[in-house]
Length: 333
Image (cartoon, rainbow, N blue to C red; front, side):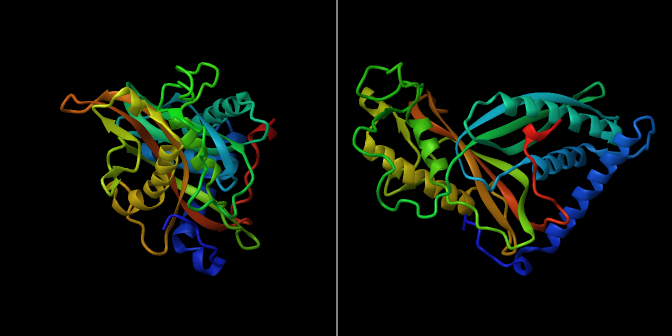
């Protein structure tokens, strides 16, 4: 579980995928009509959840490259506002306007990142409060630095070696100096980079098909959720001492493989918020954000830990004559 399988189109172009394709193309066609007839008012409305889903899904299938391989990722956030009525419904014309607003904002985010080679990974939208007739929509856009695909990931060694000793967080750098301000990184960031850099590439789709994602979701972890043989798989220490703040290469490797176990096995099998996919459905891990934290437990015990935000999505195989290949955001006029 956790890796896509190289299935044939007949096996994986499911009725659910076909239904999603029809919904995406219906919204896309309606957007075209609105843009070509700006003075006409259709009177069509959709629920706030339909609006959010349509914007997010069409954007991802049009501009997202989730099946490319990425190392470093960066997340940008902003808030936009969608007019809604007292029942929480939005006019089609307002939904299209918000889509175009998000497109402009995300394009600027994307252009601002100076990765040598980059790709747009993911758009996530979340609805917020309604004030007056304006509903908040929280926007999260993830851009990635492209890398070579991994075909034979390391097994039982690395990716950290002698000298890869890092303070747990706070960008304190390596442990051989006192809070290294030259190397602005830490164990949390280095583990995140290693997880991304060693992700197995997606399988090539059958001729005439492409992968698309929908319904991305996040799983957030404190760090103390999973253990094996009495050891926390994610870095987590209560009542810590100074020596606990440094993760030597052995600890880095332990938590690297621990993180992989959590991402691909523990969370999908045991986390109560992970969706209950049936045997015909597929999901994929897309990216993670790992941050070193110092705080207290509910019982006021001091601790240091690696807070995790893991992002997954449903994955579908769809025909390119129905859903064309995505385009780069920078290719827009």
